Length: 467
Ligand code: C2O
Ligand code: CU
Image (cartoon, rainbow, N blue to C red; front, side, top):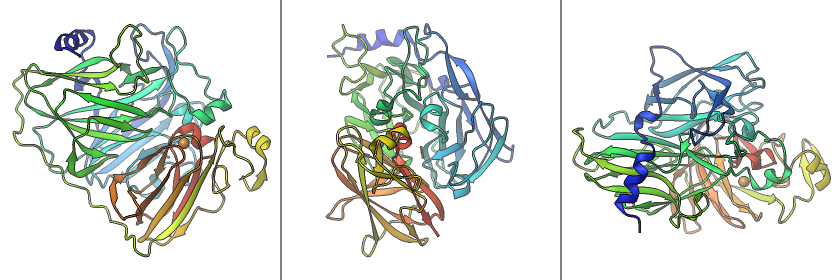
């Protein structure tokens, strides 16, 4: 068992406080907030690691935390100081289509030296994030992402806040990022799993000292290319209050948290004075210390006596108004997911021609949706605004996936009609089926893809149109 002393010892290594990630408020009318992407020398994880050549927004890893209030306008000038085109996607925001940041579908990619002004309204309070959406497996993999927090309009000021962005990196023996992002076909299948897990780009195992007796909203964001985080809460009085940005009607208690790539989990946590708890690696996937029988600690928490006023009752968060899909008479769209090394891709359409496995491999395509590798010329479906859509997904691969719909939140529905919570990204086990339902109320051309970014590049992308 883990003693308080173990936790306290951990606490001396590094104190992570909410201040360890800089918060920037993009608040009109002060004008436009600037996000500048550039190559930046930055040490990932342990401070003794050799600097990595990351690509970052405003030279920070993660990028600056943008905070706005629900319903506010967000204005961001994206300046591209990279050597290759890029764009920014505002993940999970039910956004105007032209601002969704998908090159080839909603905008031209922003060329080196150029800029693009994003201007949109953030309709829902919650935990979101932004990330590069061109050459994503390499651009996000090198660090082009940051948190976007939309605060409740009646923000409960007695609540503390802590945003934790999780990632993993593949480092060389000196601790510098390996930049072989275009190296291997293997990665298009398995995804790039790093050997070093970080929280806000800092080493795991640090401790956040939180004022005792006060509720804290801890916002977890999985920014990793392909890693699914399976975490366990130990000795923490925590409720899950939101998933993928959407507040839950009823907070949940769960010891295990699963965050597939791009997913978010918000916890409401309160510690008593002197109390210690932690979030650990649940399945030993990133245990780094072979002498240590304990699972790796992602982050520890320690309740500290500090005179910070807080609210006494459990805070109640309002659900965002999202239209419920009507299941009766909804349009059903089948999506058959195939490919990967266990079953193979076989024949597939790619860029309008039918290719065999060898030709697809040459084009670095290993996955297909309904027989098509990567973006089809015609959408998966076209529907009228306001209609209800059910996508019946059949994962016929031997791999797990994390399916993400742009511009909408959906619910996983089971055959008896039971609906899950709102999500924008859903975890699918290997060889499984899942149906997701949503009201197609946001006009435009929307991407629908696996958020394991190598899978997306390797063929797992399609799109739909709402007219
Ligand atoms: Cu975060 Cu197209 O996705
Ligand atoms: Cu996938």
